Image 1: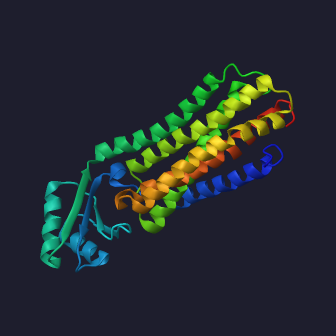
Image 2 (image 1 turned 90 degrees about the vertical axis):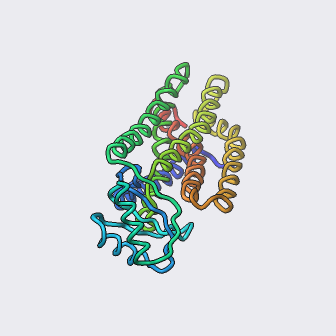
Length: 296
């Protein structure tokens, strides 16, 4: 059986490397923001007689806006992104495509104004920061009766670090997908991040609660108690995560193409959250124990 106390530096080192890589990728590529956050219109269409370059050039040359055209890998449709969301532009674009390329199939059209997109962008960032902060503060409050080596603040800070790790990894994947696959960050991905945090903190609380109870009732070093607590909760955590992973894989293979990237982010976040609950949160508790003078 693995030894959290003995190998804590290894587990935290792996997490640190992944976290640094994630932050570096986000800084390098940034995010390809969807119309939810930038405003404009997104037209999903199939034009058999045109390439993305031809379609974009024709629309840009015949209208007052620049059209960015990409191909949705999951459906094979063209995604035409327009900076203007007015009905007049939409009608002009349809006319231009019909006249220059003949038959085409329209699948969807979404539009959003700049004021609404600005509020959504601010609200999405505020939601993520607020959730991370409130969950950590709640852990401090819920563990306020903790006794012995670890105070409630140790559980709260450990949860804060764990949640930041849980958000960073899938966010880096979104950044890479946006750079290489032109996958846009929209409100669906923000929802996915919030779901990931909620699921991960559930497992983290289970581990932390067992550590707190064992500190009250069991004699031994902090490392021995943390190891015992992880062993006692490991099967539950892994079984819960594995069940969800199976469901997400099934949805990834058999689900609707429009939700493919959303499900992929949930899958990555679920796996990362299962790791962080055991191999990030628990070792950080051990670090706080060492600072307080209790050897693990």
